Length: 419
Image (cartoon, rainbow, N blue to C red; front, top):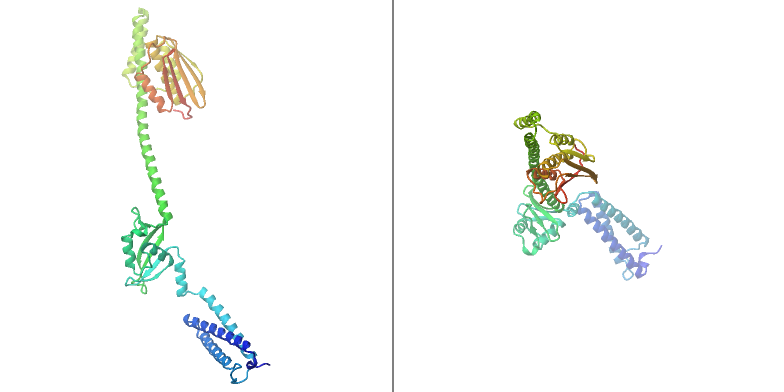
């Protein structure tokens, strides 16, 4: 077996260099285990191997071809020895690396704090910053332009924001600031409690951009809801006015019909013979008693409008169909009663024609008469005006024309609800 001292110079230098590198790696493993306070047996083994590696390195350096060897040693001995030390160092280093990933240490705590999405820093009892994660460091660099030294420095910068920082305090939310990138952070300072943490302070910055935007949207939605509520309130008030106006219209139409019948009866009595006076006075007495008594609740049907018109000497001819017991029938019958009265008073007619058609959910009603045509444009009195308001309140339209003859047209939307 060849002796180490007989190796060529390049072979000796390669072996010396390999031994030096292995010795350095073992020394690093020894220092790491001492810093991590590993088990004592591992540190003793590392120390022994480190000493052995140093002695072997010294022997190899001193036993080269240029110096007489201290003693002869086969080359296989240092090679196998260094291979064993290298294998031990590699296995030990791998185990320490695995253990560092599984155990909590100062470095693992610092790494975990740096990975937090929130900014975080800690100050001791004197206010000196002793730990600051990457997020807080980035925020303070934007705020004051450097790494924070004291907690008072951060609080002072937040109270009086530097103009060059581009950070803006939000007036609608306390403790929130908008940074140049558009993100919104809330800063908080909380003293830590506990026997070992007494005197320490945690200063944090939480990203509340999405929460703030959600609150802004919620406030806008609330404002829109308040506007809708105000509109609904006004609508309810108008509905009450419409109800009162509808009742007033019904009363006016009722009084208009009764008074019209009474006046016509008086006129007819004057022109009648003595044999007919008694019967007509009876009808007049009934009309007066109706005015003196409580007003009856009228259904406002077309049949009722026909009967009243017949009593007044006017025939009502209806063409088409109108749904019974509906608001449309109520309005059309009120319009017929108004047109019958006006036909007698102004047109001296004896027949009123009602034509009802339906198309696209709209009920169209046209009312005409056989009397003389109006000479001038029709001025709506209290009866027609009240009728128009009731029609428009129900969502319909009313049109009155005088050429070529009198015509009243109603456009009423179809509704399934009965009165």
